[in-house]
Image: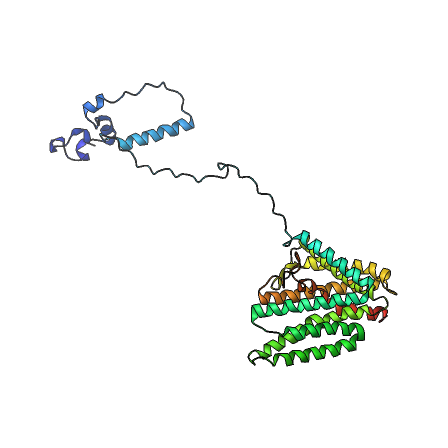
Amino acid sequence: MNDSSWGAPPSAGYSPDYWGPPDQRAASAGPAYDVHDARQTRPMPVVPDVPETGRDAEDRDDRTRGAARWSGSPVREEMPQEPMPIPPPSAASEPPQPSQPPQKKRAGRDLRAAIGVGVGLGAVIIASLFIVKAVFVAVIAAAVVVGLWELTSRLKERKGINAPLVPLAVGGAWMVVAGYARGAEGAWVATAFTALAVLVWRMTEAPDGYLKDVTAGLFATFYVPFLATFVAMMLTADDGPQRVFTFLLLTVVSDTGAYAIGWRFGKHKLAPRISPGKTREGLFGAMAFGMVAGALCMPLLIDGGTWWQGLLMGLAIAASATLGDLGESMIKRDLGIKDMGTLLPGHGGIMDRLDSLLPTAPVAWLLFVLFVGTG
């Protein structure tokens, strides 16, 4: 094959270095830059031949491809380089943060004040209970009057309901005394006349809101003084002080068990829409504590009582006390308040202490009558 087969002859104005077979063109190709530029190029050092390893061979191929790519250009162009991304600071590069100590559970109330007030109230109740029964009846009546005042005040403040306090207070105290003096019959009669007094008293005012006011008054009549009359009726038995003391002790113990177990182990909410702080574990704690206390108190304090009756008594009181607490929590949520009052530091108001006692009183009275009679 002759040279003319590769293209135009040299006479066509083309350099002869660009014609001929590829192997001859590579050999005859001259430098692609000016001689002046060539003089300023630093000569490459002579490197002795050494055996190439696999990695050296790869580097040589890369250099060859790079030289072939840039050959023929008088000035080497730099490839645009993207800015190196700045890596985000890692956890290892950040200075160590001081570890936060685990948060301890809080009781939510002033425990010192609560314990002090509780001990003081307990001393007054026990002293009046075992010294003179009539004094204890007066204590019950006073608690009823204060509780009615707290309840009606909150209803008026939060809902605009004017439940008549005067007939409620007078009739409530009378109901407690009647229950102690005449038993269940006297309590029912006093309750009926108190409800009638509420209806009549409200008639002296404008008719607007009459229905809601008397409805609230009747509710207060049954919620506070009527349930409290069962405590007075327990007191009429020969061992009445022991019965009342057992009823109070089991209620307090079950509340304590619910608080202690629920605060320490509580995880599953009992009624989150009503009382978010109460847990199922707390309910089990209330039942366990109440049953143990009942098994000890019934044979020791009650004439004719047995340990198994105490177990049932403690279980029933724990359940009724929890329901009573939830009931008042429902009322306070509807009213948008935390406590019914501020009379007792660390506890709230009188109604905040009667919430579990009031619904438990008829349960305890009934079980005492079933187990050991009226006495």
